[in-house]
Image 1 (cartoon, rainbow, N blue to C red):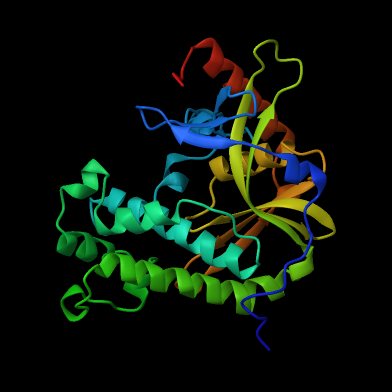
Image 2: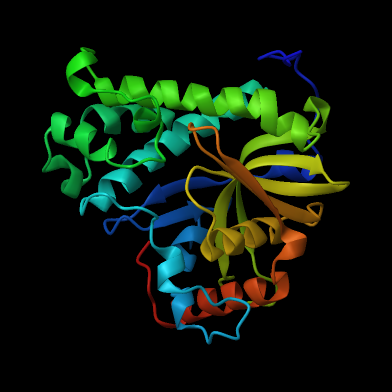
Length: 300
């Protein structure tokens, strides 16, 4: 029997999670930052990780990731950024559907995601008509609208991409409810927080302290550990593992991490932090954070 979409409110929050305060934003260069309770701004974990090219690590390094591995599979068009753009918006909508289902949703950027699908702000995407955007996405076999064989000319909605993205997000939520959550044995009462925003300051980093921010999709008890669980609608890469480890390190109560890749086409996979080179990922992340500060890389 399917679990209910909604469950009664429960007091699942540990004091450490409840006390967290952080605000986020972006600068003029679209670099993400998080603001702590002293109104100091720190780069997001993803902004730090984007500086790293994992292909530059030696092949024998546990952090090496070849360029071929990082390329999107089966690109049927040169407009590959359209797929990236769509999956970003789908990811936001899908996150909301799942965390709302787990009854731990907090305000997020889903309104911005909807607006982006109606009237894109991404300059590369704005060059294309709505018909071209739709047709380009149909060239890929791992997005929901292609899986359902949607055709723009027989889908006479006012905002076709938004409506299809909402349907894709619902498919993701259905897969989570009926397959993923039961398979990983995640009970509702084991989920403590959703969309947890944080700022973490490195110990002994001087003054002002070095720090970074982020947002954890779910804090939950899985495999007998409290974990930072991140949901991905794109293929799992080394950057995602590093991000998950950085999220884990932000809270002393969190003992592990997990990445769940889910798509509206019905495919999904899960990775556990025990299978990653966690110490190497954490050390390299900290090193890149220090280097960014030394380079005065971000103007927040």
